[in-house]
Image 1 (cartoon, rainbow, N blue to C red):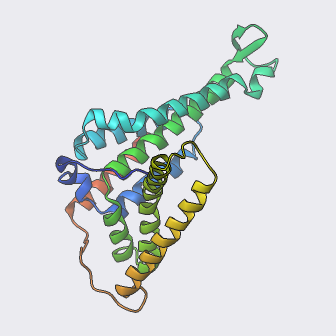
Image 2 (tube, rainbow, N blue to C red; image 1 turned 135 degrees about the vertical axis):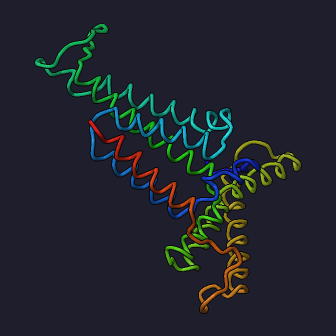
Amino acid sequence: MFSPIDPTAAQEASALARTSPLLKLGLAVAWLVSLALTLEPTPPLRLTAVAIAAGLMLGRIAPGRLVRGIAPLVVGAASIAVANLLFSAANGDPSATQLARIGPMRLTREAADAAASVGARILAIVTIGTVFAQTTDPTRLVDSLVQQARLPARFAYGALAAYQAIPRLGEDLATLRAARRIRGLGGWRPRLLVGLLVRAIRHADQLALAMDARAFGSGPRTTFRPISWGLPDLLVGAGGVVALWLSLLP
């Protein structure tokens, strides 16, 4: 889940990749917040379709790559929907419309509607998040937050460093386990956590020295990767707002 995404050349040259990450983040948040304003399954499904179409056409994400990114999370969404269907309080309501009975378990239309709504919203969240992640470089996102949203550089780049350190912890753990196997100490041991903590502290110390050497937080800084507003931002922003409005129509 936290593994770095390696975009293809087509993705890096796509319209979504050239769009301001801050704008894409704002649209994604607006879309996700709007899902809390409706209990119907239709608007989330419309947003899911729009997100997939945008990822394929504007983001130039290969269909197989998009499916591999969404599929594991779709399984989780389906599991949550089934759990809501089976264990909904509406199934015990005598006035609810019965759809089926499995042994002593009663399934009602109200429970099915609620489960469909929950499943559709989770599917929309998963799809929007996947398309955003596969068309947005984390470093460019932080650059956009610092330059366009005026976020403090020390906080923004520190968060980026913490995000990039998570996969490194997995690599460190694999290295420690390999070292133990070479010495004939196989299996899982709590001491591995001690070694992992030591390596994490060393990485944090090196990162702090590197940020201090680059004068983070000491005053105004120059920009190595300037990000400015452009025509793709206007088109994608207008299209995102129109898509949201059409998706919420009854």
